[in-house]
Length: 259
Image (tube, rainbow, N blue to C red; front, side):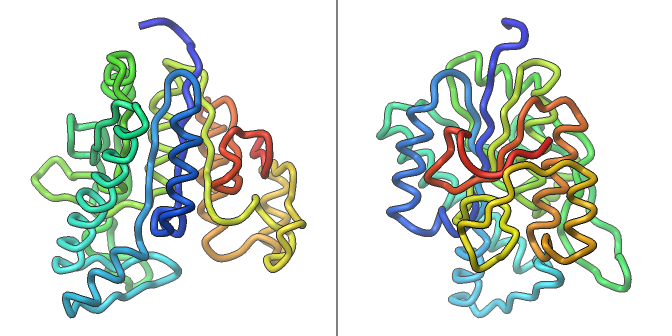
């Protein structure tokens, strides 16, 4: 394997995945990215919709899905099946030879079941232990583009639901010893905003001291906190560049740079 070649890891959020036009444009842009690349996707809203049709109630705590046995079946079907294989098929139509993966496939990401915290049992939710960047790299070097669903496994036969932003950061970190990695979080907003209702208020650069200050004063809140935390952790573990941007700007020239 060639040493320190460039690779791009794109994470696309569920809101984009569930909008046919937005997803089509993103996949066009993803197909146009030269060289080595990996796509990580979410799909939580689709899982909620499918669960409702099946009569399975969704419970969220702090933006995190409580995953009991019934919900685990739903997210496995939706993330690893419906969403993942739809993206793979659409990439094949764009002449990108893609393969859909969960963390269990080729043992690329192993995790443990999250312990009860503050009296909250998250169920079958996984916190990552290990990731095999060399295995992912072998696929990439064989000319195959991995499309990774937000599912891991515990090494004892159980699938675990794992946050997609965490999966993306984990994949990027695992590849960092082998490649110069650019990690791009693509979602429906143009970046991290100083005013949530004003898309023109993109914060161009965030360092860890900036992040601490923004969290303290409420500028960064809710689901954006773990997204930026994952981005900063990726930088701390050797990822060359992280950008949080709109799904229509995955070339990395716009949005918020995490440094």
